[in-house]
Image 1 (cartoon, one colour):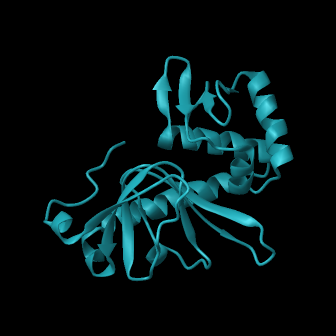
Image 2 (cartoon, rainbow, N blue to C red):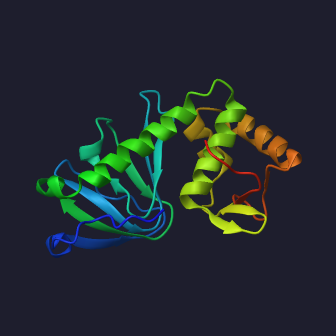
Length: 192
């Protein structure tokens, strides 16, 4: 679903665009948002013990940044090449639709994470990632984000070993295939 994210009221003239490389962290400050034009990023934090926590995956036309989070520390890492617009906080009234989408996506992920069964959580997050970032193929939906088993474990709150075991089961069931390392083809997708 593509949405014309910014209203056509000259907001583009008031914001600056910046590009980022894979692995680069996007600067976050309390006085501006980032609107992703292309690419994929991961927002995350970690516990006091140092355990990483994935907060979300974001792509084209998604709004990200510190003003949307009370979590500290909060970081945004580029998973692909990214171009983003820097939108000052004083322009919030022009981007309420993007803020609403951010809340909705956060709730979708929270819903997935509340599944009692870790296998269902993994299956549902793969379907969600397929809908959000996948490309359609004849045999299913390909997620080509180079997600590791550790990345998936962090987002669903499981261990890497458990995720590897479940991915092997899902592959045997025919739910997914892995044509390349860290690339997934979801063969049966639907709603989450």
